[in-house]
Amino acid sequence: ALYTEPRQLPRHTYDYVIVGAGNAGNVIASRLSEDPRTSILVLEAGVSNEGVIASVVPFLVPTLTPNTPYDWNYTVTPQKGLNGRTFPYNRGKILGGSSSVNYMVHQYGSSEDYDKIAEITRDSGWNWDSVKRNIDKHEKFVPPADGHDTTGQYIPANHGTNGMLSVSLPGSSQLIDSRVIATTRDLPEEFPFNEDMGGGDVLGIGWVQASIADGQRSSSATTYLAAAINRPNVHVLLNTHVTKLLRTGTIKGVPSFRSVEFASKLDAPSTIVTARREIVLSAGSIGTPQILLLSGIGPRDELEGLGIPVIVENPSVGKNLSDHVLVPNIFHVKDGESLDALFRDPTLFKAALDEWMETKRGILASSITNHLGYFRLSSTSSIFSTISDPASGPKASHWELMVANFYINPKPDDIPPETGSYLGLLSALISPTSRGSVTLASADPFAHPLIDPNYLTTPFDIFAMRETVRAVKRFAAADAWKDYIIAAFGNFSSDADADLDAYIRDEASTVYHMVGTASMSPRGAEWGVVDPDLKVKGAEGIRIVDASVLPFPPNAHTQGPVYLVAERAAELFAPGSMDDL
Ligand SMILES: Cc1cc2nc3c(=O)[nH]c(=O)nc-3n(C[C@H](O)[C@H](O)[C@H](O)COP(=O)(O)OP(=O)(O)OC[C@H]3O[C@@H](n4cnc5c(N)ncnc54)[C@H](O)[C@@H]3O)c2cc1C
Image (cartoon, rainbow, N blue to C red; front, side, top):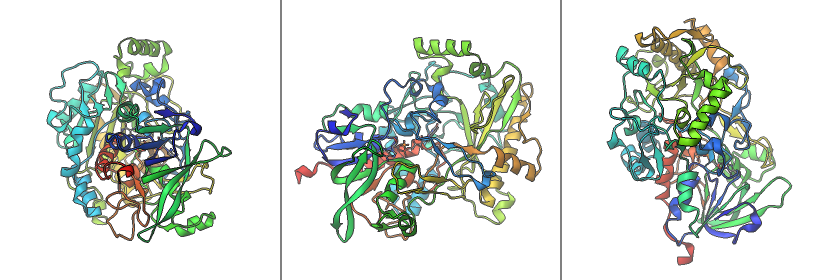
């Protein structure tokens, strides 16, 4: 059942209380409630996704964030690596969390990401061979909206056909599709074709797979939660801001936490609910460390500085933040051959929307990109003489290329040109070495925390980003683009290091893939926030299941890895209810 006010809750004690009905939280709610003996309460700060049309129509995704009621509307602190700039950091505040507002690219990453997590945590349960078994129950590969022949565009054996989340290839073709594929033939050494990144091999460029079915977004709310919401053992409470977890005693010599405090707003009365088995924190890479800190779990000096009693001292909480930083690399192209007119001309846009409304087809049935790829820096790059390779392994990437057939620059103060046609060859750093943090700005649970991704503050990161821009220019110089690309639009024509650095520091923003703020580490390690079974270190009764537990950013857009983490996590919980004991 779905509730919108605390007084509607029929009870205050459950087997599990899940904080956050987001990407990961809904997987846990859905899987745990398959056992009818297990009772579950999910607490979600956001609103329902029902009736939010922009969260249904794939191409409307840019209207969902930032500065909307479906976004937390966070901002990053001034970034010293980006000339002191600050910008919004989008996060879904809606059923489905960021899976209801993201750009729907769906992939899992490199097999070497998972093997590296297994190595870091010393738990083979996280290696690729073990984790990939969950793809079958997670994924349901479906035909694209336009029903085109997908032969050669993916490898069926890499995919599930019977799982929860629908995934498909692009549902509408774009004019540049054939040029992208031709580039993989023009420059096969540097930009090879990759038929399918879903099997753990990410290198090369290929067709985008997206969480879309029948021209509509597939999120954790429309799939996992939708399957569970009518079960009598699942209660979901919306508009509910969790303010802290409460210590309820001591078990095996460590503080135990079984109660969760929440309120609808600062001056509203708070309510307390209790989890007989465990509390599951799935509030995401920002919300999860914030709640831990408010609960007295974190760095002693930070907590004492704000007058928060320290219950579990852990210097790692909120640290190790890492993210995929992005530069737009926009090119001016042949007039009329792009999607720019669609954004500028309300009549064209209305026609596209009408088509979608009538048929769920057309350009709006897909997300904004049909192709992306992952690549390595040259192994002879000078940077590797001073820094060891930060990629997950020799088959993993350093950077990603995303192809968008219109003017796209996520920088908030950027003003798109009123005329002309454009191509975005966006590049993102996949293996950053910069690390940032989430810290409390105040002890007020309703105040946004300080979010400092600390982008581009290491020699490797700026070196690698510079090389991505150079590689993009080589991509754009392929024969396939000769009669199409006119010139670079933006300050990246010069090849001088200093000029490229200035361009990057001026233009960079994010792909919104923040991870690592409650990282996994080996059992007994002196660092990290959770053990490999995702239980909070030095505490009892709290497990964390969301993007925050990933120790480093994967070779993927992060929803797929988060789904796989959540599916594996669901297997770690004890079956049944405390009532049985
Ligand atoms: C604009 C944007 C575009 C993106 N594009 C892509 C993409 O194309 N492909 C991709 O793979 N990934 C993409 N991502 C990233 C991906 O969506 C996230 O990494 C992933 O969804 C995070 O999952 P999560 O479970 O950790 O957190 P979330 O899904 O964000 O869930 C956290 C939930 O907890 C709730 N919550 C937080 N704090 C509290 C509190 N105090 N009390 C109660 N509830 C709380 C939130 O409201 C939210 O519902 C994008 C993200 C954004 C924002």
